Image (cartoon, rainbow, N blue to C red):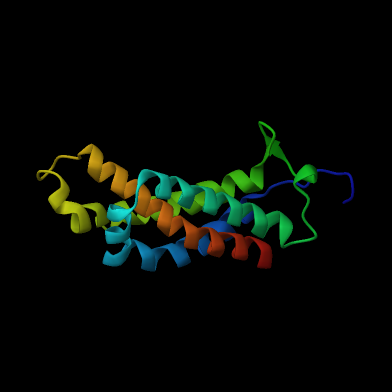
Length: 146
C-alpha cells in the first residue's frame, strides 16, 4: 500500500466508537470529574483539549509504524481517521453526559432550574474535555488493535 491513500471505512469509525464510549462512561458519571472541571481555569480546559489532540495523533501515527498520515484519505488536509477520532473522543463524552443528565446532576446549583447559564456550559465543556482524555485512549486503541 506504499504511495496509495488508505480508504477510511465505516468499520474504523465503529471500532473507535466502541472504544471511546467504553472508556468515557465511568468518567461522565463521576462527581470528582465535575468538581475538577468546576475548579479548572479556562486555560486548563484548553490544555485538556490540546492533550486529547496530542494523545490521539500520537496513538494513531506515532505509536503505530504502519500508519502514515500522508497516505490516508484527507478532509481539508487533515486525515479522516484523525477527524473521526476527535469527533468520537469528544462526542462520546458529550452524548453520555447529556443522556445521563450529568450537568443537571452535578452542576444543578450553578443556574436556576431549567436554565443553562454560561458558567454551567463552560464547566460542562471542561468536564467533556477531561473525559475525552480517557475516551481518546479507548477509541485510538480500538482503532489500532482491530
